[in-house]
Length: 345
Image (tube, rainbow, N blue to C red):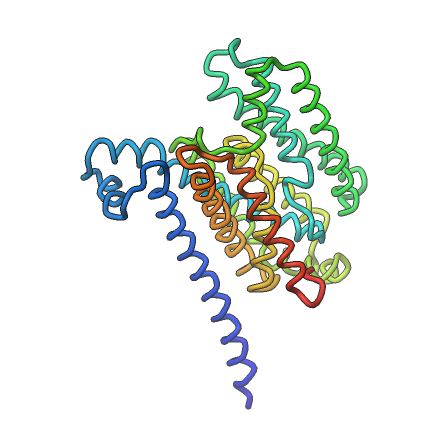
């Protein structure tokens, strides 16, 4: 009888590891399918040969120059947004918190729009360098603004949420102003970027996001039990010796870096950082040891599936992935809400 609680705990833990393993397998399969899919479908054999450098020159060009960077970018950006959304919901105790809803993505959109309207055609390599730099700069500037506003009010969740919403409307208004004064070509470029796209992905850009990802994940992992305890409420977390305000600010800075790095290369992508954490929470609960890695894998899987869908909607063309994530995310999110008998939060 004494070993029964231990056996129950071991069974629960084993199921959580199984969920993580299943999601990891799903990510690998969707990644391979993403490389295979497109206007010219490739077989698994052709993909493997191209990756090993044994295929023909056409297959090698299709895989290494076009599809592999896009597929890899979908995985790393999805993982980054999944973690960012999960930790943002944790520190703010808000089921609707995500980089998209708190204005960080809108700030990146404004930065990119500013580069398209004022920089492209004036600054050399503006579209390759200035657009992602501006997007990163303004999204991080948005995060710093939220941080300083929250710091004045001792980092309360209400202040962070309200500051984020205010900046969301501010940057959306500024984007609308730039769209109003932009030329037809500039307007087209701005709108296409705001839709979100993986078409500009390259392996060096993938490497940048990946490096930031693997640097930030261990930092979150070291604070796993503190972040788990934070879900019990600020008072209980403080009673356990946790500096709640310091932890919240630290997590927010890491989320900001992660989000800014992810969105500066691919544009505005919503719902991934919102839906992936809810899927993970339903499967493994709030324990950060399982919740964070499953959120990363869930985000990678969702964006990878969206990447595949974006190539299948219009034959011979690539549909904006930001629209694809919305088509996938909205029905799934509504399904989760209606499926649960009790409040999903």
